Image (cartoon, rainbow, N blue to C red; front, side, top):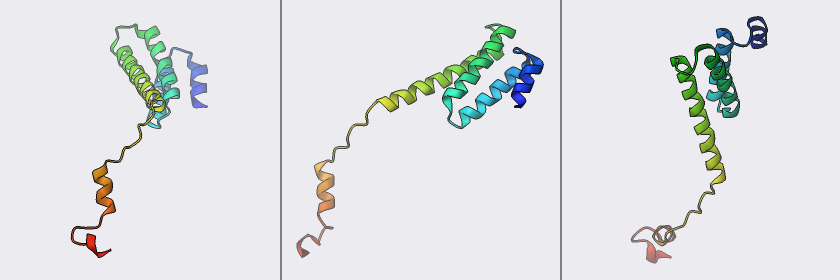
Length: 108
């Protein structure tokens, strides 16, 4: 609600609006909501580009955050798509657990 009020009162490219997008992106990123964090960071980046240009340090740091989230989202997709190989049991480990401790093998 506060974000909507700020946005309506201040306009699309006011520093308070971009700050709100960035802070909401930070919260969503910390909660693991990467898709929505990416959306907020991209909104902030577009405002920074509009206000400061591509070469401003603030714009560059926002671009780094957008890239970081995009990489993490891509990694999550690769992990979700890549099947986990089955764990093969080695004969030595199974034979260790099937037999009793040394000295007690002949009691059974």
